[in-house]
Amino acid sequence: MKELFSVQEVAKLLDMSHSGVLYHIKNGSLKSTQVGKIYIITKEDFADFLKEQKKEKEKKSKKKPDEPLLF
Image 1 (cartoon, helix red, strand yellow):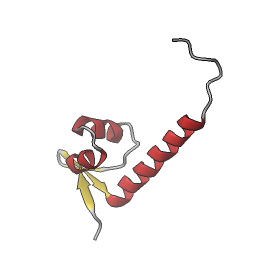
Image 2 (spheres, helix red, strand yellow):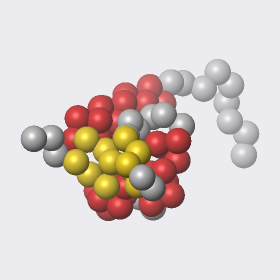
Image 3 (cartoon, helix red, strand yellow):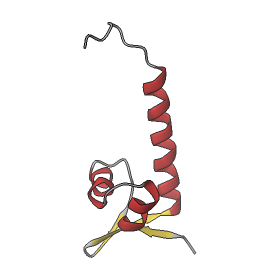
């Protein structure tokens, strides 16, 4: 049987707000299934989301600015 998470559980695991998790669901970066008025996230989809977030973070840290930043 698949392990399932609610939006609130994912929010707690990521130390993020409920609306922050919904944002990722709505923009498609976090896959979920809507059941009535709630969203269900599988363990596999949550793991995929974490992997993608890690890749994005690594890309941003490796990318060098083309121009120096002026403050």
